[in-house]
Length: 288
Image (cartoon, rainbow, N blue to C red; front, side, top):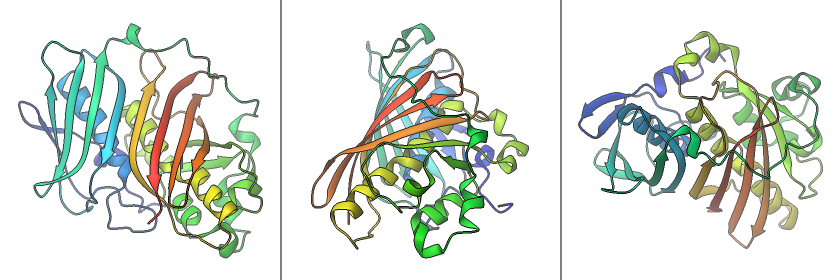
């Protein structure tokens, strides 16, 4: 855990041009393929870049397309172009002159956020009522948890506490909403996490947990097929007004509503400890 990638380093912006922000390696790899860039970081650097270049504005929504895989060893460059006369920004994340991700971002002010949402927090207990997934894995056979979940939890980014442990371990596959509490680990909090954008942390969580419901769905309908799904595009809408505490606990709820032979559509929501929905998202993905 002490060797976990440090978010305050990974998401530290360096303005290198009028509309260009650089992020230095080492970057976040995926839980299973360590040298491959984590898609959630592509999304998070867009958020951080806009905050860096437009500090007076709030990001209201982001729609991103994951174009090609990246590496953790080379810097990322996020180019941000405001569409004249509109609240929209086009963002492009590049690495070694190759496009990694593109985004369409809507900006405004805090009072423009969609705070009056109909999304209600599920009736669950507080985080301390549930066992840490890391602790659960110490007493669980590796083949029960599966490689993806095991590596995800051991990654060292978040303390993970599933509401239904059997569902998280794939002991039962009922296709019901997946719910999990997450908060940055103590290692992250000791290493300057308070300096990191709270919204960027939420974006990491969206991609961190988007796969669980789709993976459960694939395995439910195609028994024995354990290929890990991959992201194609994602839309995120913020529902908070003001700052997000990067060190807080967040409840993520996801559900895979559409499933075909090799594609999925996952919907998700993130709530803070007070019960407010701070973000909703939709992700389309595919299974290689």
